[in-house]
Length: 159
Image (cartoon, rainbow, N blue to C red; front, side, top):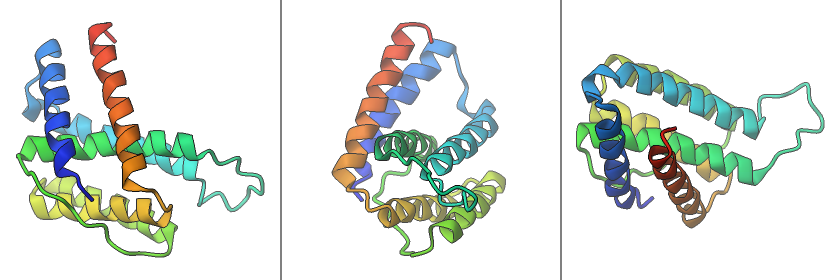
């Protein structure tokens, strides 16, 4: 995955948000971790792989990609915070529900120790989930860039 390209894009957004709201990064890390959990949960809800009780899941690839892009933004913000520019390879997996559970477990690890190893592990699982869903990276990047534009528009409009 060519995530290095997104690093600079995310860095510009983070700097604009911090400037607009007078934010000191170290004081909001816990809030960003909670936001990541929320965004991942919204993404998983759209994927609906855990909804064993539901026959008609009405899955929308567009909504799933939108939520995936939201998660990607938060992962990238942690890379920006730690000043880590690298491409991360997805972990291979076949069982999406096991991957999702692993993702939550690994995020709790970087919640306790936000370092490159824990961040990479969580992010590689997240990217692996995208592979299970057969996401094309160009498509993911397109949704990420669309959401980035929305976020800048929100800043301009005092969201």
